Amino acid sequence: MKQEEVDRCQIQEWYLKFKSDSIETVFIELPETFVEYLLDDSGPFLLPMSITDDDAFPNRVHKPEDEEDFVVSEGSGDEAEQPALPPSFPKIEMKVKESIESLGGAVFPKLNWSAPKDSAWISPTGNLRCTCFSEIVLLLRSSDSLVHDLCHAYDSCSDKTASRPRKFFLALRKWYPSLRPEMEFRCFVRNGLLVGISQREVTGFYPALLEKIDDMRTILRDFFMDKVRGIFDSDSYTFDVYLTRDDRVKLLDFNTWGASTLPLLFSWEELEELLNKEERQTEFRIVDSQCGVRPGLKTAVPYDYLDTSTGSGWDQFLRRADEAFKQQTASPGSGA
Image 1 (cartoon, rainbow, N blue to C red):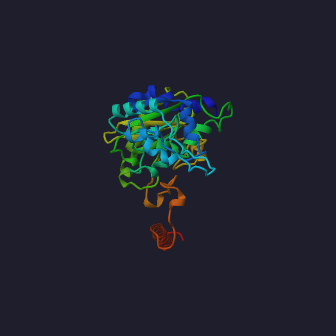
Image 2: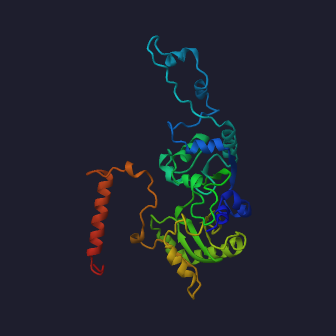
Image 3: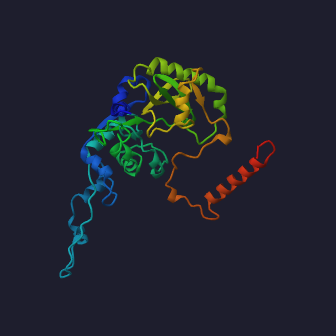
């Protein structure tokens, strides 16, 4: 894989070409000081001081009545330990505020490549919906997956000359509350051919998809041929799409072929083999039964937060799942 292939998958690089078929997005270039803040784990985790929050200003200037908190008793021999002041990024905050208003009041954030999906657990809503600067920063600072963008973007490149791009962008994408996760799909392109399509949400079984699979394959193949092939410059890559209720295709993202991109219901070996099959019909895979459901690729909360002690909710869930599995394998015709 070449570094230029990775660069093409940055949202600020491909968005303008595909804007009419994508989700409305606003970009904010991030200064290096903000990037350093996202990576800084040397001290306490402080959210930036808001320029729109009147309660924040007393933290900038000490009022006389508060001075006693910072005074050391005379003769103690110890120096006062000043509390760490939160950082402030007023220019970014104002741009974020204006962008959120222009996009209808709610957005979901991402950087050049990745969205902070692994930190959705920390959000009050349990998802990536944000309505203000502090909510966005909380997601970004809490995400481990964004470290890939910030520090390891080119680790899989054979011609690696840097560990990260020269510029980072905050992409704010319009939030749609009614999107159905089962209608997101990942399309795999190898040497200019659409060899496979996989359901992205592999942790659930959606029976209604079974009767639509042939129609969906046709719609997505046509979209690839008409809107993507020959326009996106790489020969091998993946792209993610959303299929609306009226069968329109919305382009969500581009990712590289292999490396850190997940093959979902395929393996990369299977996808390579599909390229060499005589029959060139695109392989389309969905979770086709309850038994085909796969565990989450990333847990919704950190593993340490899961209480699996005897009698806990997770303990009861795992016991029931184990009993159901034993009954299934012991039933006639199961092959057990």
